[in-house]
Amino acid sequence: MSQYLTAALYKFVTLDNYKDLQQPILEQCLMLGIKGTLLLANEGINGTIAGKPEDIRAILAYLRSDPRLAELEHKESWADSHPFYRMKVKLKKEIVTMGVQGVDPNDVVGTYVKPEDWNALISDPDVILLDTRNDYEVHIGTFKGAVDPKTTTFREFPKYVAENLDNTRHKKVAMFCTGGIRCEKASSFMKQQGFEEVYHLQGGILKYLETVPEEESLWEGDCFVFDQRVAVKHGLEVGDHHQCYACRMPLTQEEMQSEQYEAGISCPYCYAKLSAEKRDSLRERQKQVKLARARGQSHIGDGKHK
Image (cartoon, rainbow, N blue to C red; front, side, top):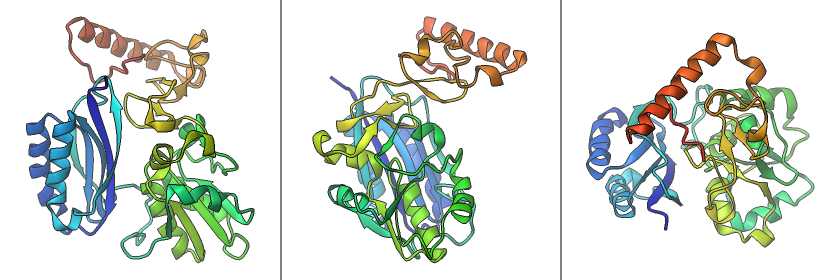
């Protein structure tokens, strides 16, 4: 039975004193044995944490004790081993980095669409469906008919919009991402750019996979997640992908059989890009990982290849 509860959470809300919140939240997490990362900024909170179920419930109750976070939503999934190595609470300018000043979902945002209503929306032929995630995430799964902007970071999204979309022609735009945070901020940006009908999937792909029955789903493949599970599928069960811990590309079992795959060092996607010096450095890191495992310890570079 899975032992660790993972909670992915975010909320756009003005936190004027976010710097003062860092240490108390960190202390609470450490006291409860919770690991993961939380980001705090003036525009809100974002992160993913994991721990024993009762401890996750306790930290969520602590966060929601702040009236501004009383309606903080989270998405749950389970793991057999702890998906994180340490606990970090970081202060940021943005809880998801777009790099465009003045974009704030607290001021203007698109229309939230519940998972159960998503299929009907994206089946409308007049809707352009945008995947706001990075290329390596799209690589292993996306919604049927979605447009892949081929961005490597969320910072590139505004440039993609400027070069490829027109608010006089693209009347209806629907967007999605893993947990909802990127598409929510993207919808705020799109509204500011003059796009009138802008929609985004409430709760993101994770909520969709949790809510919509597989036989009714328009999702194809796995959903990449930013922890040691690598990917999840319908019902938020752990997927079949592994990860190259040199370039972060998710890999299938077949790709891991390639001569260019070396655990913790290279894969078919990054093999040709690595210098001899970089390969040696990665081999040394992998050596330290194996030594740490032999001592029964976790190492920061341990990808825990399954």
